[in-house]
Every structure is written in structure tokens, then in C-alpha cells.
Image (cartoon, rainbow, N blue to C red):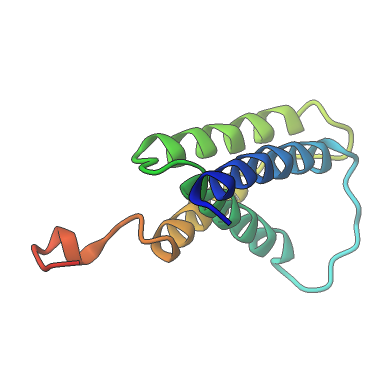
Length: 120
């Protein structure tokens, strides 16, 4: 697979994942949870995947990618106040931010070796 094809698939994957997540986030809540804190783990995983797809989709996403993804999460939380059975949560926003940080670390977005002046 060429780099161009990978970027194209990553863009489609990101748009699809954001659309599916938006739809699931605004549906009436289900009470089914397998363990305590499950929703926070799901938020972290989803936003780490969003970051990874965004980093694959664009060569140098810089600060725009995490800011836009966090803004997306903020909008979803605001819209949840209008959805029956849903409640916006500050904890969800923290989980989203943590997921973005994990995604950035996994994808090398923070590049600590370059920041320290070491060859990367």
C-alpha cells in the first residue's frame, strides 16, 4: 500500500469513526456496563484511535489535530445535554484529553528525543 493510499484510508476511517461515535454518543444511554469506569476507558481508546487515524491521514498534524478532536468531544458533550437519558460529563472530557495524549505518544507526536536535541 502506498503512502497516498494509506492517508486516504486513514481519512475515511477517521471520518467514519467520528460519525459513528457521534451517532452512538447521542443515542439514548444504555445501562449495560461490564465494569466500573468502562465509559472512561472507551473514551480514552476512541480518542487515541482518532489521533492515530488523524496522524496517519496528515503528514504533520501539529497542534491542530488534538485541538480539533478535543473541540469535537466538547461539542458532543454539549449536545448530550439535549439527548434523552444523556448527561454531559467533565470526566468524559478528561478521558478524551488523556486518549489524545496516549495517541500522540503512540504515534510519536510528542517526539521527546527531538525535543531533547538527540537525533531521532
